[in-house]
Image 1 (cartoon, rainbow, N blue to C red):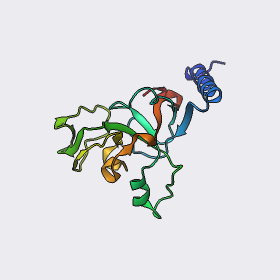
Image 2 (cartoon, rainbow, N blue to C red; image 1 turned 135 degrees about the vertical axis):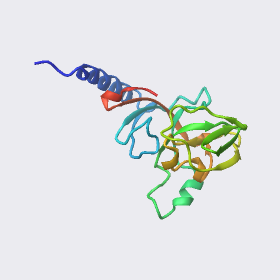
Image 3 (cartoon, rainbow, N blue to C red; image 1 turned 45 degrees about the vertical axis):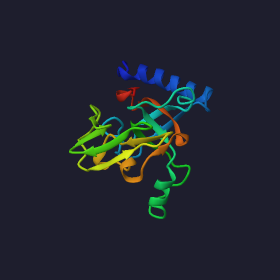
Image 4 (cartoon, rainbow, N blue to C red; image 1 turned 60 degrees about the vertical axis):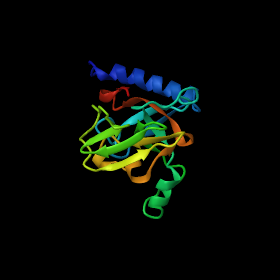
Length: 180
């Protein structure tokens, strides 16, 4: 009997992910993707591994996919309508860095009036937003599925202190395993 080709890879992947999360539970953590806001990069039911120490010695970079706690503006916006509290986490892509001016118009994101090349989008945004100057120690985060993402263009910036970590890998399903 022969096993499908992905089984040895799955076993290696499960072992590696298990070792990382078991040996370093304070540093590495896995998460489940429940929404379509990061499609096509992340699909509903994907599982990802996050490095919670990634931003202790370095700053988040544009393009990083991050896990973060909901800012107060988001919690206040949905108070009573959605079950979001201080333990809920979100996953989005860092787009705007501290001090930059971010604007969404005519189907593009502009950083300091320069269009941002984004090969990871499901489709171009069909809304206008900004311009917004990103405060110090804060970030603009947007979903890759721009037209179906509850992100900074609704509720504003994410303070650096709310960032939990950087997404390293998608480990499930095995056919989509890989670094982000």
